[in-house]
Length: 182
Image (tube, rainbow, N blue to C red; front, side, top):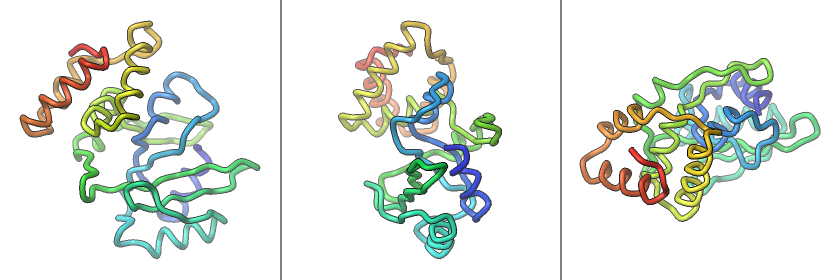
C-alpha cells in the first residue's frame, strides 16, 4: 500500500487515506483486506482524468471505476495487486475539509502516508450508513470495547459540528446503535 501511494505521488496523484486502511494500519495489520481509499488533494479526478490516466499507464495499472464512479487503479506492486480508489467531494460523497486538514502523517514501510483519524473514519462510516458501513462500525465497536482500538470521544463529538443538525443526529444514532457511545 505504501509503495503504491509513493508511486502515485511521484506521478502527480497525492491525497489522504480515508478508508479501512486507517484503522488497519493503526492496529498493526501488515496485509490489507480491502482496497486503499485515497481522497485526492493534488488533483480532482473528475477533471484531471489525464493525470490519472498518465499515472495508470506509467505504473502499469488497470484503470476502472469505483462504486462512486471515480477512478479505481489496480496496480502491480511487488508481485501483488494493490487496488487504490480515488475519491473527491462529488455528488453524495463528502469529506469535510477540516477532517482532511487534521489528517495524521504516519510512516508506513518507510513512506509518509497521510490518514484521517480513526474518529473521523467512524463519523464518515456512520454518515454513509450503508449496511456494510454499519457492520464495520459494529466490528470497530468490539475492538474499542476490548481496548484494541483507542478513540477520543471528545473528537467524535467535535466532528458533529461539521454536519447539519439532521446529519449529526443520524450519525449519533448510528454510532450508538453500533455500540459506540458518545
